[in-house]
Length: 282
Image (cartoon, rainbow, N blue to C red; front, top):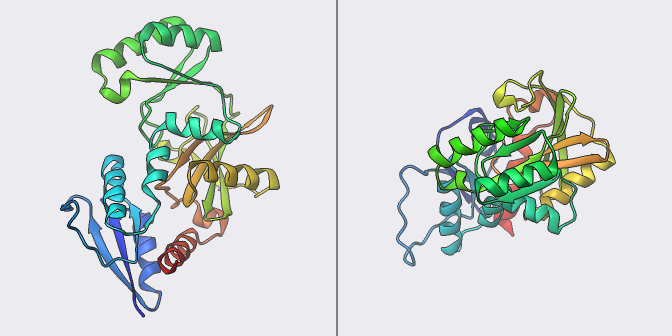
């Protein structure tokens, strides 16, 4: 019997090309491309023939709402809208990690300039201010003193959107030039890389260099606990090495992996396709 897989996407990046090829190489699989820019839902009246949808959109709001709408029509999705909701919001991610006792850097969430300054000074400089919703290391601010804090907060309040009117401040971790990104597919931590940079932001999207990171028991355990905290599925976990051990920075639900396949010698897209096909059969 042929399985029909919906492939929810925006632009087709290298990751999507690798996943498409994997699907096309599998017997008994019909791949249907779903461009989120052309989607239209008729709420309560939609009927879809997909056995599962793999989400690969780069627009968070489209991905989140499309997943929920597909689920409301009875379609299984990888990842689920619950995972997208939590991972797409750093505040919700931090809450989930805290509730599941997953170690993370100290975080303060505030709603005004004055309360943010007070929270930052209670934590102690430096701190990192982040938008609650965002990715690729964009719009992060390392705040070293009160003058910088007041200036950045004024800019956020004056120029920012709704998402920049809620303040997420994380204690700055001296990463010694690198952090770790681990990859979880289902119930397995499949690979990890170091991301190294002379800049304090080590994202590969910002120029960080990827090298292989050995999968220790500590790293695998923390990665699986973090993935479970946000609802499981296919996720990437950003991790800091600290004096207190490994701590989770963020969890990503539409993960990029182009720099990690050759680096780790792990066929990550093949494992993702395996997981999606297994979900389609369940």
